[in-house]
Picture (cartoon, rainbow, N blue to C red):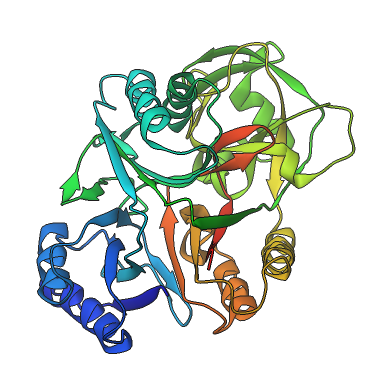
Length: 403
């Protein structure tokens, strides 16, 4: 059984202590804690939170890290003082925690080192929960690129089959800081992988919410996450035409609230299917040189992309439909708990929507199982043929365990 506890106390030590106490009140004497998943709002001192929660739960490993906000069965909050914990039970088969540092030196090289560890220590088809530190340094924010990390991991795995999902963690909407818990404490520029025992299974689905509003265009000039030209024209001008905004208005508008760039997987001529797209948020525009900047750096020259429009109604429908479909495939009482990794751009405080899409998730799950969620910078989930970094998505995982 997974037990959940949360607090929004502004004192970091007390927040950790209260969340842990609420878990202890639910646990019976026959239950033994194996490890903790914890997420802390960006205003908290993570060391103090850990000291507080360990007054009740002891020195067991803690995974997770910084979050813009948290989601539980009853609450959605992103004020910066959130502390939400899930305690996973001790099992006869041990879990493994694998770490790698040096993301600020080379995400690909660090990923390859982690992939080699996974190849050695993880059984075939095991579930791996992967968290990494999104903010390399700043301000202004310099990001650790999730696509490079995943490329390295797959190079190190050498075709070993694993189910990998997780997130790049951030502490606030301004992308000013981040950290991950490596089992012992908060660390920077590291990736942490938790390998679940083979008796555990995970059932994962992705919530989308964007539709294409352009024909395919070719990226003709790009440098890392900065796109300078689409179809041989300044990318900024192309967006100006597609959004039908004046130059002055385009400079003032947060384009990530309106459009993204989408890469369609598989046959480009197949009918539209939202799950076939990898969307990238636009985080900045530069009218002086005609460029736009993306959250990730995995697009390249020659790639055919489309401009994607965010559709709030589609977001809500996707959350409802995908959650119901996932739960329908799990027998009543089999779900031990759910983890929801939610792009911070989907929160009402950021996108300006009237309905929190996470509230639809709360409604569908109800009290059927404990729900722990958090707002992330990047979501990682299996998509088509491998795990990929995603933007503007929600990733839901439900855990089950063999009897």
